[in-house]
Structure formats: C-alpha cells, structure tokens
Image (cartoon, rainbow, N blue to C red; front, top):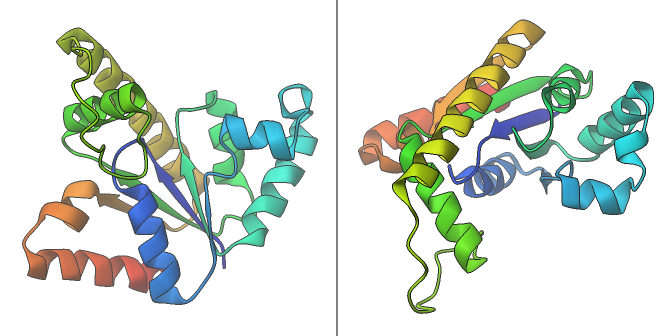
Amino acid sequence: MSILLLSHQRCGSSALTRFMAKACGVTAAMEPFNKRVLSKTFPEWESASHTELAAHFDAGLRAKRVTKHIYGQHDAPIDQLLIESPAAERLVLLWREDVEAAALSSLIARATGTYQRQPEDEGPIRRIPPHRVRALAGEMRSHFERTRSQAEASGKPLRSVSYESVYQEAEEDRRRALRELLAFVE
C-alpha cells in the first residue's frame, strides 16, 4: 500500500514522513515531485502529456511506501494527478492551524537557506514585512482548501492531521494522534 503525505511548507512533514517510515519499517521519498527534482528525474515534465506525467507519478509513488508532497508548488492539475494516481492508495493531509507561523517560518527559511533544520546563528536577517507573511499565509490556506477538496473528492481513504496535534499538544494527546495515524497507515 502506498501512502501519499500531502502538506504545505513548514508544518513538520519531513519529520512526520521519517517517523511514519521508521515506525512502519518502510521506505519513504521526500518530495520526488517538486519542480527541482522533477527537472532532474524527468526533464521534459513541463511539456509532457497527461499520460506521461501520470505514468511518471505512478512509478514514483510505487517506488516507496510513503511519499511526501508539498502541495501548491505546482498548478492544481499536477497535485490532482498525484492525488488521483492509482498508486496512491491512502492520503494523509498535514497542515498547520497557525498558518501565519508556517508562513513566517517559510520566509525565514528562504532568507537563510535553511530548510531541514533550525537556522544556525548566522546573524540577523532582513526584516520580513508583515504583509508578506499575510500574503503567503493566504496562499497556504488557499492551497490547503483546494488540496483538501481534491483529496475528499478522490474517494480514497483520507486522514487529516494538524501540526499542532502531532507536535504541540500534551504528550498523551500527541501519542494518541500518532497512534491513530499509524493505525490508518498500517
């Protein structure tokens, strides 16, 4: 069974993907369908037909048990193709309730070039205007709503999980949320 973990930026999806893979004893892929990776593994992806893209996505999803994908990096039809792939048998949708914190974290990561860990003390970064945080948060909300609608419309088993429930709740609540997620995945 292949699990497609859909998330927006800066909501703990890398850590959750690694956790799921380790807990289930399976392999995982981190964003094999983002634009940078697609440009390397499938250079002609932007001019590929729907059928060619679907075949590439199916093969990529079948290669690993868990595949993480950041929604909103592509046009809606690309995310839709991934969601509808027969190789994606179950969907996990991860988001952050405090989307402004995710947006700010994303803008800081872009400014520092540090994405997979906390930034080192590299000195001050330029001021990030609040309107940029609000704009990115609005985009993230819009992408989340679109992706949730696509996932629900697919008819596939779907589990929605918030960053807060997995990372910020009391320990007992976190453990319950993770147990429920693993039961869904397994």
